[in-house]
Every structure is written in structure tokens, then in C-alpha cells.
Figure 1 (cartoon, rainbow, N blue to C red):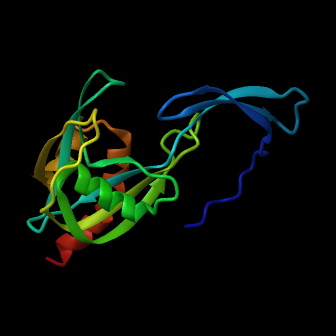
Figure 2 (tube, rainbow, N blue to C red; figure 1 turned 180 degrees about the vertical axis):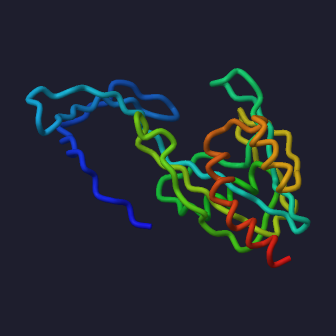
Figure 3 (spheres, rainbow, N blue to C red; figure 1 turned 90 degrees about the vertical axis):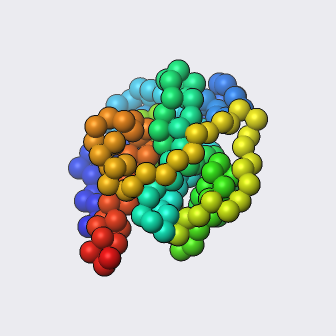
Length: 191
């Protein structure tokens, strides 16, 4: 279904300047002006590279999951594999790479489920959601210096139950499960 045109006016971007640089994102101060107001407003935007998250389905219909410590929440998080894309990297290639590096799983029929904006209110990047089928643990792990994962598989329906019960709280993982749901329904019908 095509999106309807907006009934509200588009703001005009007047300029941007970087106010902070970190190793994972920049913070920009961006001036926008509403067409019906003379005064420009200053907004902060987190400028980050695109991300990729991977729904990896094993031959026995389980999903590959990782549990890791997350600094933002100061807690552990149950997730699907994923990470930062390299500049110019294809989303599907990045998904296959991240899956292999974080879990040692490789598979077939890798394809894009969709793309989402993690938080369009303050971020300019996208998260690409990739499906990999026939995932099998066949490669060595290649973790970054600050990465450490508990790797597991769980039946697809159990993963959805965990998500509905609040056991999975990572928004991009929930987005991936939402986009995977019709694929999973089709696979179940054709079983």
C-alpha cells in the first residue's frame, strides 16, 4: 500500500554543524524552519552508520539468538545477530558477515526483509533487516574486542512467545520479528 501524501508542510533544512564526534556516531546541530514561522529552530541529530540485524533460520526451524551485555541499559539483552555496516557495504552482505562473525552460522537464500529508521526523531540512520535460511554453525567466531555473546537457538514460536512476554526488548529485533512473521506463516503453511 502506498503512503498517502502528508497533509502538513515539510520543514526546510537550513544547515548543520557537528558538535560532537564519537567513535560510533556524530552529534549534529541542525537548523530547520517551518514554512509558516519566521524563526528557525535548532535540533540535535545523531548521525550514525546504518545497521543490519539478521533473522537466521536453521534447517530445524529455530532462530539463532545472542545474549549480550548492553552498556546503554546496563543489562543483558536477548537479540538476533547484527551490527554496524561498513561504509558502502551491501545490506545483505553485511548481514551474512555479521551472522558469521558473531555466531559462526552461515546459510543460504539471504534476502532483505525490510528497512526501518531506528528513531527518526533524532537519528538519521537505518537498520536493514535480513533473513538467512538454512543457517548452520560452520565458521569460526570473529568477535570485536568488546564483543562477547552467548549463542543459542530457539524454536521460532518460542521466540515470538518470548517477545510477546517482554523477554525480548530490543526494538530492532522486534521490528525484524514483525517483518519475518508473514514469511514464517508461509513456511508453516508449506511444511
